[in-house]
Image 1 (cartoon, rainbow over the protein chains, first blue to last red):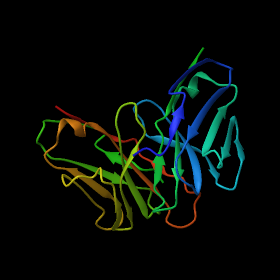
Image 2 (tube, rainbow over the protein chains, first blue to last red):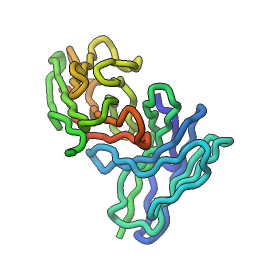
Image 3 (tube, each protein chain N blue to C red):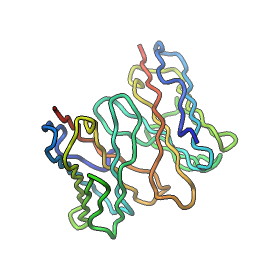
Image 4 (cartoon, each protein chain N blue to C red):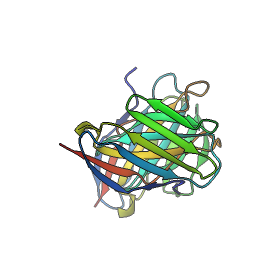
Length: 111
Length: 115
């Protein structure tokens, strides 16, 4: 089953613009992670935010977490065509340390 | 460290045949996970090993599916009597048992097409 739902399902922007993706989840978490997947490839870890953190930055990525609303957002600033991919949030609820993934946002960055 | 490797990358089979996928995790990682991903969806958890012990199985893992990790290194996922609904990308991931940041390291996946 999917723990999270992501919004929007698809997003198309111009190079240089910012892209924001949102993730909602259902149960308490230890941490929330974001992954990127290029078409037909495996997933690559982008960033992890722990349940006691509210915001985290990594390069052009900014992640926020609101545990009261059970939601997170991923902001990619100054997007590039190479950022075109699907982005998934994943929650770690602590049981076996498996991750439960959301449904994903398909981002297309056009030149 | 060459990352997580999966073999084969693509497999086309006829309904009713058996297929086996292999995953070689990062060498010092003692936790290994299998996920299944269908088109347009996120990965869904199938099963998880710590060393050679299979510690958790999803209800998605019907009795036609079996996974092993005999020596706590590589793992295999076998699907018997394949059905068209088994067509998906099968992803393997690993992580260290202790320490680390909690992230999973994924392989490139094995894409199964059942005709």
